[in-house]
Length: 248
Image (cartoon, rainbow, N blue to C red; front, side):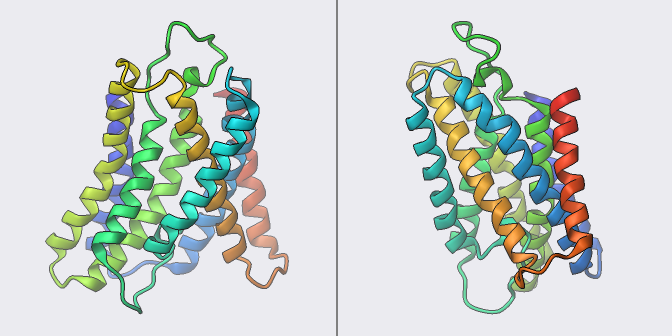
């Protein structure tokens, strides 16, 4: 659990730190990485997260409903983040850093909450509880966090003239996922929530992953013309998710 927490923290903290030292970043390279990360995230959600959810004892209709809730909840969160979690940087316009940070932190908290190592003894090994700390999911979250941290740091550096203040705000975002992980671990050992709470969190996060990844696909190809470079990167990302599912 602690290793996962450190990885989740560094996935946001290190890109932000490098942004302090760099004079700028390549928007094109960031976009290509986004395509890869989006394809991986979409694929691992479809072939790993969602099948695990429907293998649980929860009502399939309820699972589908939670996935839909997660999808549309992420759409609401996006209204306050201006697409930062998609790796987008918007220097223009008025925005509240407080709302931006709260929205991004809520999303990151939910991501971290499904990374709990706990496996309830009253659930079979094939259940969704057995896959909370899956390396496949962790890798998808990390790849999703890197461009989000870069975009957020670029925005904060534009907003604040003080680099220390900007990085301090980013560290709050970096701590959200580890906090979600520790909270999920605590709740898994308590009786404060129903036993199926982890399945609900999984489904909500799966829905948010679907929203984020499909938005990345749409926004990186707004003309709806097939870009063979991006398409190839998307296929490579999907292939990596399939290989991870088969061998990790």
